[in-house]
Length: 212
Ligand code: GTB
Image (cartoon, rainbow, N blue to C red; front, side, top):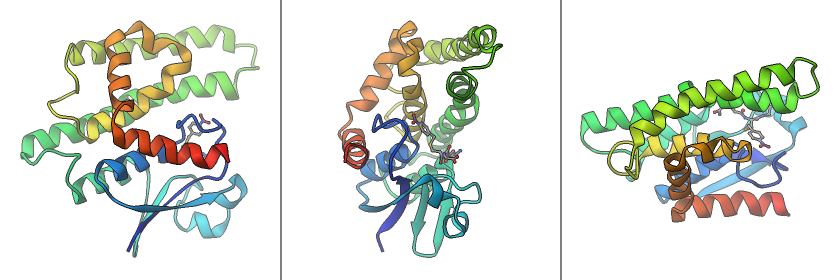
């Protein structure tokens, strides 16, 4: 049975690939899995049919027969554990790759999400002018050790893994802020991720929806 994921019918980013279905598409492409996409309006995401799949009424979801998953960390990990290409076979290396997935999602992404909130949801508040530099500095304080750890390597721990897929997906969200450019090795790391054929296919697929 072909996997079905959900995505925005019209992403607010107009197809820049920043909505979280892109990372799931990327994982499916890296592992050579065909998939179908069910597109949802914001309204449909909050209806009972979708809430039965995703308790928070968000995208993406993942359906494979009876199995329904939400949360991109869980979905990408499931794909990576099921299919070759995203996790090393050796147990310790596999555990380290999964650790980088968690680092991306729980140590880096919340700070980046905070920047999105500060700019787009709270941009008109009188205190945003004072708060924004603090938000940016908190991100810098996380990027600095990440940059130091990556150093001159291509990927975070040996070969490209689900850990890199998740970290690149998260860091991509920073492009418009200019913060990535302060860390040239991280900017190059993100560019390496985007240059992967599987990423390009995932990006093109979401763009095709949003450019339509
Ligand atoms: N923790 C969850 C996961 O990783 O799966 C977060 C899922 C999530 O935030 N989904 C968002 C959503 O459904 C879409 S991706 N939002 C609608 C809602 O909550 O009602 C977040 C997103 C949206 C748009 C842009 N953009 O336009 O740049 C970027 C990221």
